[in-house]
Amino acid sequence: AVVLVLGDIGRSPRMQYHALSLADKGAQVEVVGYAGSQPRPELLSQRIRIHHLKQFTLPTPRVLYIFMAPLKVIYQILQLFFVLMMLPAFDCIIVQNPPGLPALLVAKIVCLFRFSRLIIDWHNFGYTLLALRFKGSLTHPFVRAAKFYERWIGLTSDANICVTKAMKSFLRNKWGISATVLYDRPPAHFKPLKSREKHELFKSLETPGKQLDHIKKWNLRICSDKESKELENVKEETSFTVMDSNGVVAARSERPAIVVSSTSWTPDEDFGILIKTIRDLDRLIDVERLTKSDRSLPPVLFAITGKGPLKAQFEHNVASLKLQYVRVVTLWLKAEDYPRLLGSSDIGLSLHTSSSGLDLPMKVVDMFGCGLPVCAHRFACVDELVEDGKNGYTFDDAKTLASSLCKLLRRFPENKNSEILKKNIVQGKVGWSENWNEVVYPLLISSNGCPHRARVWQSCLLLTALASIVLILLGLWTSF
Image (tube, rainbow, N blue to C red; front, side, top):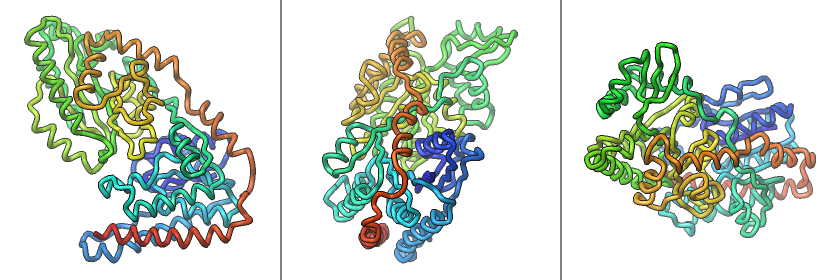
C-alpha cells in the first residue's frame, strides 16, 4: 500500500497512523511525501519505507518567479508520477486531501496504470482553503475550478474516507460521493504523564537556553511566601514539580496552570480572540489577588506549539501586553516531546474554525487522548467532537473563552468542573487502532483491482486536460 501526502510527513499525523495501521496488518507500506519535521519513530519499521520528494525552490525576484511558478507545478507532477510508478507493486494509494493539487490527479493516473485502487482521505476541501486567499469568495474562477477538480477526482476514486458526519453528508448530497467516516482518534502514546515523567520534561525544557528557561524566574517571583518555605526542603524543582530527598516527585502546591494549544498559524484560527483573552485573564487574576485572600485563580502559562506565517505577528502583539500573572510561550518541539507536553498540561485550547465548516481539529483529539478538557472555538460541526459541558467548552469570542477558562481554573488544581470533564473523556475513549480496524480495514479487503477499467482512458484523458488547465491558471495566479 502507498500512503501519499503532498506535505511534510512529520506534520501529517493521521497519514502516519494510516501507515502504522497498515504495517500492523502485515502490509508493506510506502510513505511518499516531503521531508521536514521528524516523523514518529515507529514509522521507521521494517515494513514501512519513506520516500521523500524533492522541493522545487522558486527564485525570490518577482520577475523570475512569474516564469518559474508554472515549472514548479510541472516538476511536481512529473516527480510524483515517476516516484509512484517506480514503487514495488501495491494494491492501493491512500492520499490525503488537501493538498490535492496535483496529488489527486497523479495518484488517479498512477492507479489506472498500476491497476490499483485510489482511496481519498478527505481532511477538508482544498477549494475552501484557496477561497481564503480571495477574501472567502467561493465564486472566484480559480476557486470554482479547484472545486470542480476535487469533485471529479472524488467521483472516480474507489473509496473515500472523511473526518466528520457533516462532511460525509456534504459529499453524498452535494457531490454524489459515498464516504465512510473515520473519526480521528489519539494513538497510544498520547496519554497523561506520571509525576516523574512530567518532572523530567519540565526539567529539560527549563535548562538554560531551552524554551522554558525564563518561566522559572517568573514563577518564583509570583509564588507565595508559604510555597517559598515549602521549597526549602526539596532536592530538585521546576516551575511545576518538586522532588524530595527520597526521589519522590509531587506537583507544586501553587504551580501555574498550563493551557496548551498547537497551531499552524494560519488565517483559519482567530488569534485576536486569544490576545484579548490573555489580557483580560491577567487583569482578572490581578484584581482577585488584590481583593481576595484565597487566590481563586492561579497564574497561567499558555504554551503554544507550531510554526506558520502568523506566528511573528502574534509574538509581537503579546510582547506589547504588560502581563503579570499570565505568560505566553511559543514552542517548536520534537515529535516525541509534543505528546509529553500535552500529557503534562491542564487544559487544551483550539482556535480552529475550519475553512469549510466540515472538518475537525486533530489537535483536540490528541488533547482528549491525554485527558485534557478542551476549550474549542465553535463552528458548524465541532459538536461532533467537543460536547459543551461534557468533555469541554465551546466559545465564540474572547468573553466566552475567558469565562470557560475560569470555570476550569478556579480552585486550581482541585477544580470540580475539570474533574467531571476528565471523567467523561476517559469514559468516551476509543483508540485509533480499534477505530481504524472497524472503519478502514474492511475497505481495503472488500475488493481487489480497479473497478473503473471500462473508462480508464476516457477518465485519464479528461482528467489530464482538466487538471492541466487548472494547474496552469493557478500557477499564473501565484505570480500576481
